[in-house]
Amino acid sequence: MSRKIKVCDITMKLADMDGRASLSFRQKIELAKLLRRLGVPVIETGEIRNGKRDSLLVKSLATAVGDSVLTVPVDIFRQESIDETWAALREARHPRLQVSVPVSTVQMEYQCHRKPAAIAELVKTAIARCRALCDEVEFIAEDFGRGEREFVMGMIQTAVESGATTVTIYDTAGTLFGQEFYESTLSVRHAIPESVSLGVWCSNEMYMADACALAAVMAGADEVKTTPYGGATASVKRFVKILSVKADVCHASCDVNRTELRRVVGQIKTLCEADRKSAFASMDGTCGYDGDLQLSANDDKDAVVKVTQGLGYDLSDDDAQRVYDAFLLLAQKSKTVGAKEIDAIVASVAFQAPARYHLESYLINSGNVISATCHMRLRKDGELLEGVCLGDGPVDAAFQAIEGLVGTKYELDDFQIQSVTGGRGAMGGATVRLRHEGKVISGIGTSTDIVEASILAYLNALNKIVYEEQEG
Image (cartoon, rainbow, N blue to C red; front, side):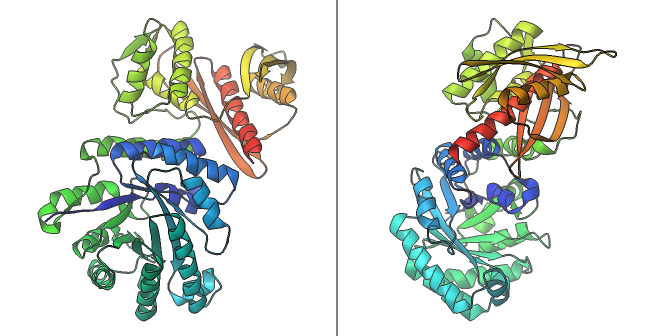
């Protein structure tokens, strides 16, 4: 009889663990929607560390993941963490709280500064509290491969008795070979009730994560943690393929949509690498859109939304209206608009923080014998703001004008210009990164006028800063 294996995506969690690959609020929502479309049963994100901002993200993800299980870890060393996390997660259709601690002596003392007995007591209390709130609670035994087997099995037993519905073993160091992972999984499977799901998290430190994940399934694992991007753990693309090819041997299958797998993995890769594009790089998509598709100002909103759906986006009514409004503005200038332009518009105006500042108009005077000047008009909550500013060039003048109207000067961490489409009427894209209170906030803008694209990108980043300040 074939068993159903739950594929758990940990891309967002890995991004939070690795600051070099951090994802923005918008990117995480977009990622969740792509994973839902792929049919991933369990989607995980990182801990709530930044109060209202992270809580808002979890609440937004609860809607974005649909029928998938949304898993959020708690901090067992902060008493308020469990209630805070549950308050944000409780609206999800299928919520799961997660308790994760190392079970090797060296990691317990080095990372947690606690003795094994103290860690065991904290786990017992935390899982019991989580289970009192949530029907699904996962316990992750980190650094499983280096833990003393008697203590590890005792910890797992304590977790199950306290209410854990899923137990996951994580070979953090990645030192177990496939056969060793098979035997470890088998021993845990025999030690816990059949009603408790057994999950595995395989490190790819020695490039054996896929093999270890398959070995774990053969030994009775019910869940496997994977990612479509990066090499830190098992690859969802490879794991699903192996499982489908060797289904008769594994006696197992999964519900991930194989027909969408290659395309969606490509979209996720593009999404995760969006902030790594070099200046003036081409923004060629990997979404499989039709290069011959052309829309004009005569096309209605339904036609535009249909194209966005074909590109893999699931827009809300508000986002769909914003995309259509931006499409009309572009269509009036360019006559025809292709799928690449639509893709750039979605990236520019959808999934954004509510805009407090809107561009009303701007006028640039520039030349090789005069200083650049910008006459800028913005609207903030209906109020018209107007000013003129000098700069070293048209873009600098525009940025200086915005800062003058806002009344705050931000450090420009990065500024990039990209070509979105080719030809003389090419659409340009700009990325602006502003540093604010130790954080870097990115904004993007697109237009046939690269100065306008730059202004829109700056305002996009500015609106995110204002939104975070209001929520914080």
